[in-house]
Structure formats: structure tokens, C-alpha cells
Image (cartoon, rainbow, N blue to C red):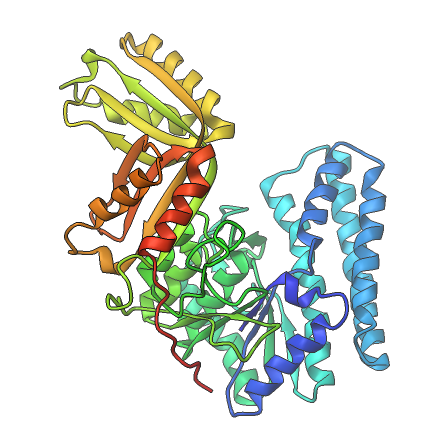
Length: 467
């Protein structure tokens, strides 16, 4: 079970809610591992503190005081004895955090390694709180960092990659003994360690990633991701009020949606579960009786061709064109290399069969940087090509296993968009046929999304959550 920061850090009774959920499953005979995120805004505050220390700003002390206050308030949810025990642990952790920040300030340097160490304190502070709350609920628990729980990674600080062979052996050694005794391991999400013992972080979606890595290592029956939403939706409810919870998704569908910014698990976090076929459930910790969304290996085509629509705003279109591109081997490689070297991620790519133009969708904030890199690179390589940019665009992605092998899906999608009076700037579809993505002017994106949802999207039929 992974518990997000919005649950753990709920001001009134977040810790009690988490403990109640763990206890309810534990008392039914389940062996439970709790993976916890940092409280609420803590990770952001730690990053600010690290940057502040690097620049020797006076703000560092203020940020530390805010962090102490947040965790001090959380202690009030615990019994007096355990609150005192956790306060002592927190005291040592804050001393270590202050010492780390002092080192950053002295060197005036924030390396990826030192940043990982600073950020790690968020989960290291929350795990003892959750462990104590579970004990207050009458269940034995032990707090472990991700590294202590056996997650071993490479040294790519900030975006570390797990060494699953070593992790499987280490996780079994660390977690099976307490589980066999009925004790709940409370593991810090997001954190791991290198073979030499340095703290690493797993990057975006890191706490979810921790849960699925451990599920893979121990061959768990299921992974529960407890959040503050009812499940994965057919569309963003802020844009489409009629959107509904999707009851069932395949791993592939969930990954497609995550790539396009849906409030979903990061694709990397789904990978370990997908490799061994462990089902993943997205559940609302504030409404635990709701079935949520089940993610597994089954591709269900009978409940609507399109299951979900994702919207990515604030993108730009970059088009490289010129007759000299046609038939010239390595042109696409040059384009992608130049954009990659500029540190720009491409969301979509399209090339005409004439080979005379290549179009790419990038984040709006990186559009000019990408264009400059291409123009400079072409000039140095003596390649005559035009580089054009277009701003104020959005990407809409239609996702669903039902599109695979179904004739006329694209015609239906673009027929609806056309009838809504929206012009399509660019189209891309992968060979998996799970996703059709297209670019529209930002001012028309909401209208197109609502028209597609009302015409083509159906929620998946409900399925009860097992006890």
C-alpha cells in the first residue's frame, strides 16, 4: 500500500486515516507493506531549502522552521508516549538535515548527490510518524528507508534506476522476517541506495515506483495506491464535468495516459508490476469503500472504443522543412540529436513521406531553445533547412484498447472534432493503436475535448473491489 502526501499530511487526521486503513487490511489476515510519501508540501520546501543554502540565503532558516512546524503539528495525532519517541527521532533528523544544508552552503554547490540527500529527509521524517500511528492502532510496525528495505539502484542521482537482481535478494532479506511475524514494514517511498550506500531518489512518481518495485521483489498479490481522487478519470473533471471513473485499464492503456499528463501513475512506476503481472489499484483514501481503478494485464475492448481523453496544454510546434532534407540519410537523426542536446523533450513527432519536413511538439517553455539549437546546428553542418515555430497549442490524446484493429476510429475522432469547428494542426498514432494524438489551437482545446467525450467516451463497467 502506497500512501500519498495528501493523505499522510492531512492536517486533522491524516496519520490516523492511514493507520486505520492498514489495520483494516492487516486484521483480515493480509501481510501489508506501507510505502509513505513526505507530508504535503515538504518535498518542495526541502528543494527550496537546498537552493537557498547554495546561494547562502537567509531564507534557509525560515524554511527549516516551517518544516519543523509541519512535523510538530503531525505529532499531535499520536499518543503522548509515541509522540515523544518520534519527536526525539525528528530532532536527530533535523540536526542531520541542518548539517547537510550547512555543507551545501559552505561549498556553494548543490550536486545531484547532495540534492538527493536533502530531499530524502521528507520521507525519512514521515515514516516514523506513520509507524507510530500504526502502533497506536494496535498493529506492530517497523520504519525503514527504501535502502534499508532493499532497493538498490545505480548512481544516477535524481533519477536512479533499480538493480532488480540485487533488489529482489535484499528486499526478501529485509522484509520477509517482519512480515512473517505480523509486523508492518513502513518504507520510505521515493528513496533507495547505491551499492556503496549513498542515498538515491527514483525521480517522478518515485513513491509509486517504490511500491511496485517491492511488489515485484516479493511477488505481492496487489498494489494499492491510496490517493485523494476516486480513481483514474475518463477526462480531467475540471475541463469535462461529466467525466467518470474508469473501473478497469490495462497496463498499456494506463502508461499511454500517464505519458500525456493524466493524473495517473508514471509509466516507470507501472513497469515492475507489469513485468510480473501484479495488479495495481488506484483508490481514494478518503472514500475507501469506492472500487477505484484496477490496472492489470487484460485489454478489455467491450466497454467503449475510447476509454480516456488526456489534454496537454502549453505546447509548441516545431517544423523543419526543405527540399535538401529529402532522401538525405541521417537527417532525422541530426534533428533529434540537436533537440536532445538542447535538453528538450519531444512529446510528439511526425514526418511526411516526401521526407521534406519533420514536425515535433515540445513544451512551450522549451520551444525557442529547440529552434535556436536547430538553426545553429544546421548552419554548422551546412544544411539548408527552414525552422518554423507555432505557439499557443494543445495536445489531445484519445486512449483505449478498443481502438486496436477497429476500423474507422480515426474517422470518428476527427469527424467529431471537425463538427466542433476545430482545426487539427498535426496528428500522430503509434503502431500499438492504443493512442491517437493530435494538436489543436489552445483556444479550441476545451471545446474539442468536451465534444469527443460526449460523443465517443464510455466508462468501463464497474467491478467490485475484493476484500
